[in-house]
Length: 285
Image (cartoon, rainbow, N blue to C red; front, side):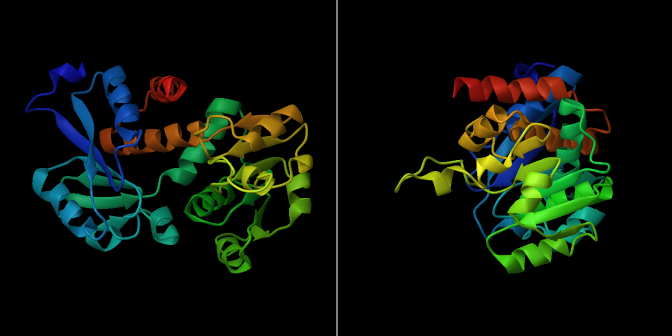
């Protein structure tokens, strides 16, 4: 269908958060719906902090088929849902709600999206990979859980706050609090922090450009930065110069949305169309 054909019969999904005007979810999902020929549309719902419960009641009352959930509501929605997926329960965070005939199910699609993106886009499987993850926040935790489930041999967690590293390592026997040496020895290195997203404001700015010393990166590694704007961070550029295979955050962004698309529609997601929608937009911005 064309978005111009939206009618009273069109199935509605959305994304809730604040601020949400910048969200790429509508762009990604609407490209997918057009490609799949579905009479569906995705819209953004600005939802102030503290209003997650009202928004979830709106999903029920209006028959909205699904909802992507972004900050600051990933935890707040949980107590208003009927059921959680195992990942959402363990992570205590929901980024996708499925309305299954009035039963609202909370999912966390980030980890599965990350692993699917690695496989689909780069031919890299998690099985037996030695992994190093920089960061221990929500994105890092979802990736740790998925990598462990898909057979990663070890997952080193490098984070400034040791208590957060310890908590993240508790997600899997394969995970542990790591060091800089684990980055150099890893097959797969992942930046799950926001370092590199913004230009430095003080000094030479190197500590704000690189989540780890780029000298630790080398040929034979796959290096992933979960940041997708800018498309190529300074750290990722250094990794490529060192001979590593590199990926920005677009892969995870698209493939986590693909997991949501399939959960909502019951169909395989047209990931190429979804990816093109993102890259075309970011290339123009």
